[in-house]
Image (cartoon, rainbow, N blue to C red; front, side):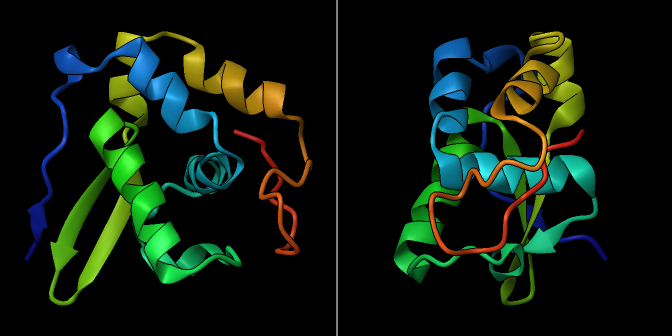
Length: 120
């Protein structure tokens, strides 16, 4: 049984400025890089970021409202997945370019959290 998806823009409503803003933060970029490497949907707390729960919630909201991720409620959990197909269709090559530009293996979290390798 699949859960309910939270509000997000449709593919044709994605705006380049919103997507780039969402990808401009090191924490959000780390989340996207992790989902790009392993597309399996996962809970918000499964990304190993050393930030408060309220800050993490904010980052997921920015990513969802920009259309970068999809969030689906299943029970008490929110599962996150990258909207790669939608992003690649609307802005071909953008996601790969941003992830490559961040640098493979570079710590993009800006914290003491383990480094996130940014290979797509």
